[in-house]
Image (cartoon, rainbow, N blue to C red; front, side, top):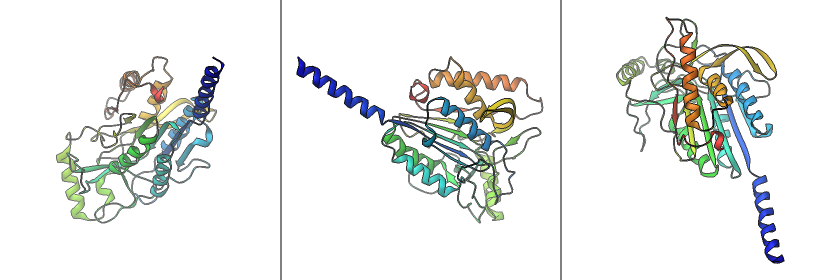
Length: 316
């Protein structure tokens, strides 16, 4: 009996040792400045990442495990493509990860779909996220990050992590970048290329493809991954001024992304247990926001959820 107790105690101690080494990791990407683009710089992403970071710290994330790539944020590295891909690659090697949280905030756009095996974009376009150093070029921009590239990284990360949550607070549309009262997080696809012929082809393809692609779907690559998108592929994501928001201990008015602000509010709602709960609460918040908008304003986008939504938020 004494020997049995010793064996049980040994395995209990072993479990505690293994569990104590498990950790939560986060990568927060916020691109507010675009030196090489005609697109307007954004005021919101630098605030988005700070607000999300505050949330994660309140949820028990350790400061050392939160990697911030954001322009306009003190102490953060620049959100260049090289830095973003390096950080995503680093997350792929985290074999002790209970939870990996990845957040993208900035301009989105579209480019001609890459002609590679397995790329079956129904609209002929790749949805892309624009790092700080994106640069227009003849046929395709330099230093963009496609949904296929992001999906490949996520697939690798999900192999080691118990749970992965990804938020995309950006547009994937190629239309206008400004509304009457809001800034939209979209750089027109035509603005990313310098060839007039390519610009016209992109314009026509975008017009013809409206409604063919519901949202970015190349990132839902594993059963343990949930992805939340700010918009469908042909919609625009606004950022607007929010009152009485606390960031870094300061309560003030801040420019914030629609998805980011409502995600934070929904997570804090005591009804939010599963991602399905989160989706329902966010729909309520979007309806509430829509009810107080200017009658001439563009309708708010439809946030999209992908993955097994019966899972507990942050993996439980």
